[in-house]
Length: 161
Image (cartoon, rainbow, N blue to C red; front, side, top):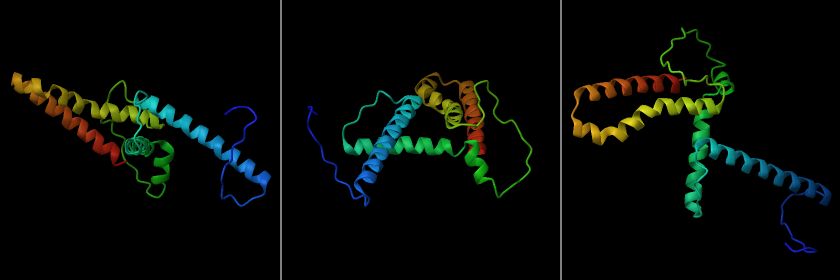
């Protein structure tokens, strides 16, 4: 906007003019932090290159980001403690999935990394499927079948809490 210009903001906030200004400033400040947070989420998910302009596409994109964030947040320690607050059941800790990249479910980023580890065998299998059909190697099929079963069992265990 050029200097010495004004802009008007329409609001339904029922306060004095000074309180309205303060409330509006706080709301715009929160918006900045929300946008900053979603920019960081996009970077963590590897989606910074996606540029969308259609309203429908933007809605789908937001839904995907919120779904991923919600799914990974459900496995963080504070949420699982809250969920398991009422059902205290003593179970033996059994190491089902052992890999050097595995992380504790202490934050949503670590949870996302763990989900990527669990899904990776299926992605690799789908990528190699055309080659597996050409090669017709029973050992490769058996190996992938074993790996996918193991991965699915781990996913069921960790999704069920």
